[in-house]
Amino acid sequence: MSVRHHDRWYDMDGLAFYRSLKEIKPGLANRLVFVTGDMLGGSVRSFIEETGLPFLEKPFMPAEVRRLAAEIATRSGVERAPAS
Image (cartoon, rainbow, N blue to C red; front, side, top):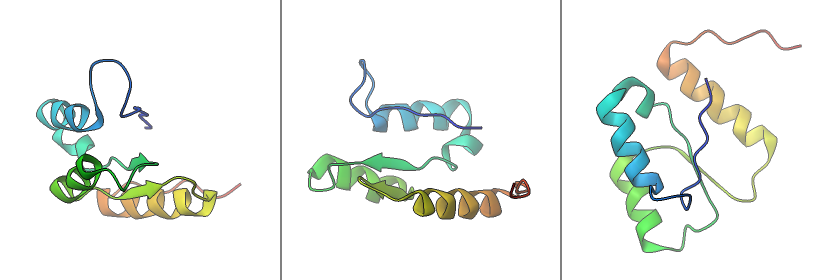
């Protein structure tokens, strides 16, 4: 399952999204990866430190996405689909 949420969309930032998801589906909240282009911003850095979520800083390479997805799947006990 993949959920994408932009931290600047609508009326809910990434931290609010994470907190809401954590209340509703705590198991899914621990499987999020935060993607940012603003690690210099204090609120983003605080969010990462507060949640302990893995993150990707833009720009990133596809290999980094695969590595994080495999790490989260392993940590969550999700079987990996065979490579095609």
